[in-house]
Amino acid sequence: MTWFSTGPGLEAIHVVGGFAWDSIGKGTIVDVGGSHGSVSIALAQSFPSLHCIVQDQADVVKVAQTNLPPDLATRVAFMQHDFFTEQPVKGADVYLLRWILHDWSDAYAIRILRALIPALKQGSKVVVCEHILPEPGTVSKYQERASRSFDLAMLEFHNAKERDIDDWINLFGTADPRFRFLGFKQPPGSSLAIMEVDWPGDNAKANSICN
Image: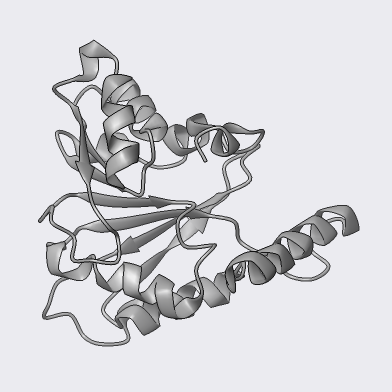
């Protein structure tokens, strides 16, 4: 996955430049399912105030720790974590899920999102980097065919699917109606869009996803 996720349109630079990371200041980012930490390393190098925690399975973490640049040792950490279980890092500013949910069916994707909720503080952001299926007729036939082919591949291999923007909004709302979808952007040259979801707190009104 480290090799595959650095292909054309999937480079870390799109995540670095596609979100207002400098607005977090000396904040903490939890890179959920972050593999060997290529995105978190790029973020830490670009934003010296950020602290990143990369979570993945034990064998991945063991290898990743040995390849961390020494100058980032105090700002990038690795942690073993199964993202189907409760998030152990409480009160982080951003929980980043890059290319995590697309190969899980709705039932499992909802479990992943709900596992974050006990850790969220008021104002925490969930930043999701994923492919968004285009509306029919809005892109070239070549691009649309490629998108639909990848969608079918997810169904065949993982019983999952790619999602259009309404599917994504509905997914967050089903996971918890307190999630507030703030919007998305598609960085130029990126294969993945960046979606921003806010957690307004336990006392927020239900159905805030559409606000």
